[in-house]
Image 1 (spheres, one colour):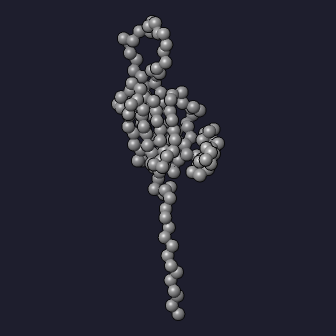
Image 2 (tube, rainbow, N blue to C red):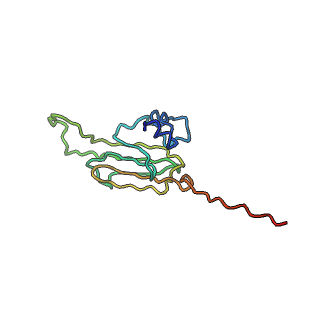
Image 3 (tube, helix red, strand yellow):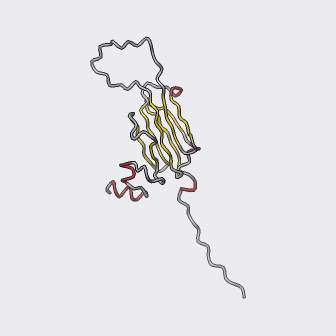
Length: 151
């Protein structure tokens, strides 16, 4: 099964996901003003809903701010406190750990119930789950037998 087939089977447009179609209001998500967050984030959909995995190595739960604004916008942020004891004149051999503030957000489709958001931090990853909205879930329709018309 190709990746394109899997996207189409889920009712997703692969080009919408690849290029984050800013013009389609029915997109699963659309980033706000920032074209691409400069912070490691994975966003994907599974059978439970929409998932965000954000690398937050070295941060505690209390350091991270998660807000829902305007009813459909998820905003994730962290403001690094200035540490005056940290010396800038350290002789690094390699400096690859991101120790910077971040703030990014996405408009979430009404396909997902943003009022039931769940967030946990585990092993340096912030896991955010947004379940599918009840009206977006598949519904089974029972076919009733036709009633006989009395004369």
